Length: 173
Image 1: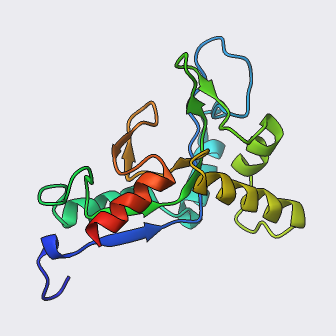
Image 2: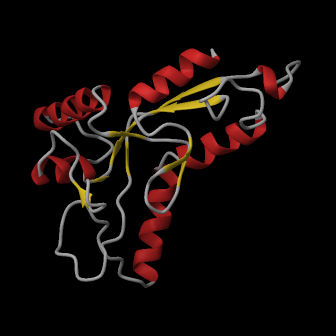
Image 3: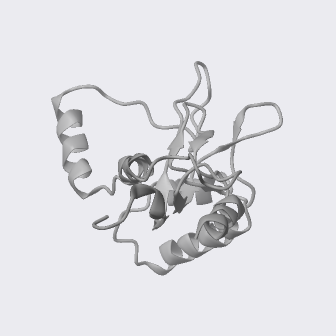
């Protein structure tokens, strides 16, 4: 930012994918689309701490970049930030009835595989699963990770679909 005003900066944040699962509603059957229940305790806390060290924090970094570049004032509508995040997000979507459902093109096994992939995914079946995710993301069948979401995974800042993120980037670059 040296020598530049915050409003003169635009950024494209490109990610490699993330997982965002909602908590299961009361009485919901076990499903890959819901975050597993947490077991509170010291062992669980240490595990979370250990994984936080290697976890990419795009939510915080992208949001801070959004704030530091001045937020939405002055950007051409309907763009809402000088920062555009493009990254596939393994996440359920809302169906017509407002219930959580699998994204189009993913069955429960494929969704579960993607949601549980390790950082070092190199086996052929894992690579093919990632390739399928990318293809579905480019077709707007799986979500794009926005800069910030609400509790229902609805974008508050940023775009929920790849085509929207692409259009936003083309509008501000």
